[in-house]
Amino acid sequence: GGLVLLNWQSLWINATPTTPTLARHGTGQFTITLPTVVGDEYDESVGVTNNITVNLTAAMASLEGTTFGFANASASGNLIRIATADNTGTLSDLAGTTILVVGY
Image (cartoon, rainbow, N blue to C red):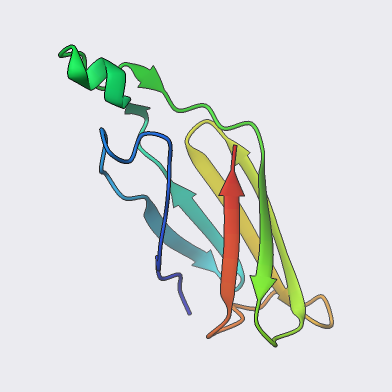
């Protein structure tokens, strides 16, 4: 099992186009790592780059589709941790399931 990045958006995407790094750490355990620092469009327009530290304080995850299960997310700094489980509460990769993850 593993994560596949289908789509992503951020406030800095036009200035810092680095996509997140996805990793699997065991059954039903994943991380999404964002850049440590980013720039925004205004700063880029005046020649300043990568001057904003990414500091997420929370995250949420939800399953999309017909698979019944659970997804939990937490965030700290530039890292989002995700845990997924099947309908019995057992950690599972939930293969083929789309998960919406929001970090803020």
